[in-house]
Structures are given as structure tokens and as C-alpha cells.
Length: 470
Image (cartoon, rainbow, N blue to C red; front, side, top):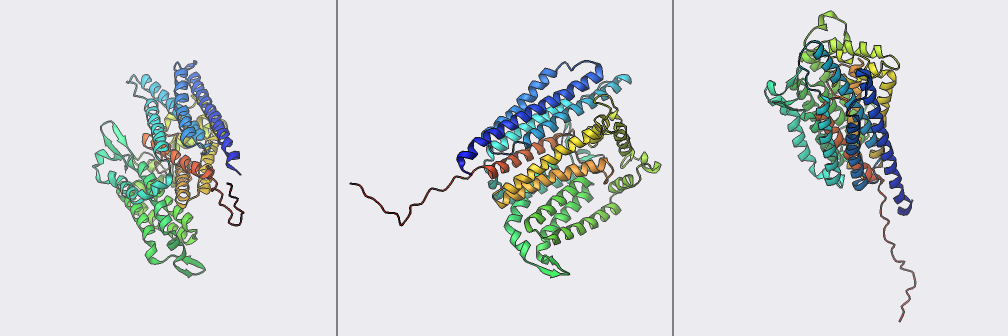
């Protein structure tokens, strides 16, 4: 396909992206209006202002993509816009329930979480714009691989060295808290470590893939090459032991293991990684009370002996399961359920809120959006023309997918609870900002892979007859 035939097509891609963004805004406003009507029988008074704000914010993101990444995938940004918009509505709906409860008890109405989430959303879009504007070629990030490793590891272990009063929330030391400001550095560390993993594996993948010996019909790596895997396992285990953060530990080790497998295409790495994962899980279960309580609550959530424990309590899981059971197939309707009965419903258990008020249909719709996002991210990895871009895009897409699986799996009692947030939906500035940066990197890699290559200049034929005119 020539450049002439490809050039007009990017305009159609951006037109499709714009139309889908408009649909995402309309969907968000419809959910916003339905929530207001269910709560107090009239439309929200700021509905027009809210709609114009979303149009301005997502419109800015679209214009930046059109200008700086015109060949990027047209579905990624609209999916993120739809998820983020619906997340704001769900958080606002829970704010209304909290305010009603406070008024009924004659208490002061607490500050809502939705306005702060909107502020974080603006910060996320601003960083999204900054990444696309200043990172014109994702391959330049490869030269900062070891710098990204040092900064990422520092951010990952920083909460562990701070006093518990500045880092611990609900038994897990994963925060940096000073006064009203709080941030989860592990979210930023996740992307930095993915950049390091991609850069390291691109340089050493031939050695990791070809060297080794064959044992029992399986190619095993050399002992000296096990260093990176053992280091990743050890760091993740230390994070788990010191910070009691099951989610970040699982996410960190899982990302490295999958990127290692993609780079080498050797199943022996997966087998060794799974063995180390089992060993680490048993150690954590036996030595960390926080992890032990969560596993116990997962195995027997209706046990009265753990129901009322302050840490690892099964009350949250029980209420989430009851809420999703109440929603059934189609849900109670936005604003008509009682999702606020679940502790931390706007963060860890926002999927339970969706299941109660939007039902199984709503849950499947949200999961389909996540599936499309991950699929398009993997497509960007396949289309990348360089090894670093392939590994980085695959790592970003897989980390997104793993976070969704771990969070939804915990809420539905498929696996123990980990405390991870649901990307773009859950309340939390750290996660939201990081996911907008992740989206920008995927779009940058997608744009590079889809961009038509300039055909080489024609070389003169040596056998051609040269005619010299006077």
C-alpha cells in the first residue's frame, strides 16, 4: 500500500475516534442524568456545565492525538474516556448516598470524592498531553532503562522506609501521606519498571533464549541467567513482607515474568516463575498476618470468627457478594440500589457497585471495554517495528489486564482480595494519573507502528543509457 493511499485513511481513523468520544460523553451524561433523577426526581443542575467540561477535556486529548499521533489506534482513547466518565458518575452516586446517611444521622456532610477525582482526571489528561508532545519517539526511552529501574525501585520501597503514620492504610504500607496529600508511588513505579524490563530484555533476550541445557525434554536456562528472575522474585517478596501489599507484589512479578516469556519464547521461564510464585505465596501466607487474614476470608467469607476482624474482615467481601446478587441480570438501576453498604465501595469494590445497580449486563459491558482496550494494546505491540516497542506495549497491555483480573477476581471471590483499584473507574488519583500515562505510551507506540514508511529514493540503473544533451 502506497503512502498516497494510506495518508487519507488516518483522517478517517481520527474521525472515528471523535465520533466514539462523543458517544462516550453522551453515555456519561445519560448515566449522570439517570442518577440525578433516581436520587431527587430531577436532573442535576450542573449537567450542562459537566457535559461541556467533559467535551473540553476529551476534545483536547483528541486534538493532541490528531496532531502528534495521527496514525494511532482510534479505539483506545474513546474506551478510556467512557470508563473514566462512568467512573466519575459512580463515585458521585456513592457521594450522594454518603451525604444522605450523614444528614439522616444529623452529622456534617463529608466532602465528596467525585470533585477530587475530577481534579485528578484533569491532571491525568495533562500528563497524557505532555507524554505525546515530548515523547515523539518511544525508542528514546530505551536509553533511560537503568535510570527508570533505579527510580522505580526507589518508589516501590519508599513506603516501607517511612513511618507507619505516613505510609500505612488498612494494614498495607503502600502510601506516602503528609497531611491531606496522599499518593501511591507503586503506581508510577509500575510503568518505570516496565520501561526497564523492556530495555533489559531487548539487550539480553538472545542470551536468555539460546543459552542453557535440555532436561526432561524442557530447555532450562543457565544458572547465571536466573539472576534477573530471582531478583524480581526477591524484590516482590520483600515488598510483600515489608509493606503487606499483595496486589503490587503480584503485579510486579507477573509483569516481569510475562515480558520475559514474550522476549524469549521459552516455556521454562514460565514454569520456573510459577514455582517461585507458589513458594512466595506459601511464605507470605505463613508469615504475614495481613495476607493470612485475607486468604482465610476468601476461603470462608461467612465464618463468624473472621467476620468482625478489623483487618482481613470478610464483611466487605460478603456485602459485595450480596450487592451483586441483588443486582441480578439487569440491576436495580443507577441511584436505586444500596452499594454504599459495602466498605470502600468507590475504590476496592466499585465493581460490586456496578453489579448491584447495572447488573450482570453492566458488568459484562465494562469487562468488554477492558477486553477491547487490552486487545488494542496487544495489537499495538504486534504492529511495533522495534523490539523495545513490542515488549513495552505488551508489558503495558498485560499489566492493565492483570490489574483488572486481580481486582475483579477479588470482588467476585475468584482469588483473595489484593486492594488494587480498577483502572479508570475506581476512585484514586495515583491509579488514574498513571493509567492516562499508560494510554499515552500505547498510543505513541501504536502511531509508530501504523505510520507509513517513506519509500526509499529510486536508485539509478547502472545499465541504463545516459543521454548527454548539449
